[in-house]
Length: 608
Image (cartoon, rainbow, N blue to C red; front, top):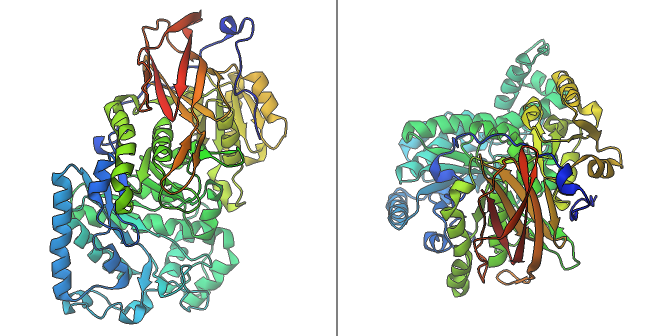
């Protein structure tokens, strides 16, 4: 649903009538420097038959790699003792050489649930390793309500192990130890999933009973605490069982993180948080129990892998963008760094200007992009050279990308708990509409709704429906209304017109509809990220850029004196850094008027 605020010209009296929307003051950035936006360049070093691509990753500007290491051995079954010893040396040498050339962090891959070729999975185990388990791998699997092993959603020789099974956890710890002792700095857990039909193994049933006992209103346990009785209870309490399923990965990750840090203090732990498409924001909780709000509590950074939402222009003229997804993820990620890889049409290769656009888009939302630099050898050098300028620009200006706060003319309430009620996330659609209209917004989950009262410039609070509110949230909404903030329900079709009527925009932009602008504040500095979505994907390695010309911007800033406006870009040809500008006093702030002559991929305007 489009909102026509996007390209608002300066109407008579506009400059004099605006009030400056004050964003939250910048807080010191608690994220370790290696993971800060701009400083961090994330990259997978493997894809299919192409592996150990640290050199290609570094050529494109990456300094954090996600490596295979012992990952394939972990789910396919260990090699012979002699081969495992050789693998230890090879992996350690690879990690050591990558770090010597400039890689800061190497994160080792471990699959959280997959067992491949069960019959031969344990054939090379040493007696010492075998002695650590009380049951064979055939008893580590996720089970249906009858206790029968469930098939993997991957098909073939895959079977899903249960993250609650204590023997599987000991096995996972063995693989984690291999990765860390070979020089890795952390672990990336892939596929931390629960079968769509649920897991009813004895370990899950026992923990489900404990989960119910810990509820605010404890559920009466069955007369007998047998596995069969608990299975019946789980089937009779579908909502509670769905919520329980979404805690399994979090608890698994917490235990793995504690173990990893006993092996290597400070070891990082993250996982594939999925979100293959933003539309799955709620539904992935219901299907595979991918719950970012839960998992992020036990992660050091939140990594998502999107299969379709690479920012770009579609052949028919529509646009695709991931910015709204970053805003929603950030609202439930417990202040952890957010990292995303976005691809188009399931193609793991992305043409260079589209990579640069994705990197800039992530930075505009104080997030990081994860690159897949596993290119065929004949295009490797060209791809790295084309992407590198964007990485260099972000790294050189990392101080402008961290410790910022989004300007919010509109606040959007994300009642994430509603995934229990519906697979349809209305807030995603609303955020997308706001972004298309270049309305500056921030997203607040139920955990942080009251914090939005500190957004002094917000004119509107949007929510799905008043029925989405619970308990103290109603008091927070009343407090918003008492401060003059209008509360609108997006269930009413007129909400875009109401937003247009009520909001005095932070930003007025004269530009093609494919241009996005994101405004962030950092003390006495306002930063405007400009993105040109008019880049078409021609193939895995080719794209077509249609630059935007003569952009006009009027930006409200929360300070009276403006000394300069700078434009930072990796585009070719480079625009002059110093930008002429005009100012108009506006209460305690200022409206700054300036132009950008050409925008090919992205730019950062810095108002100081």
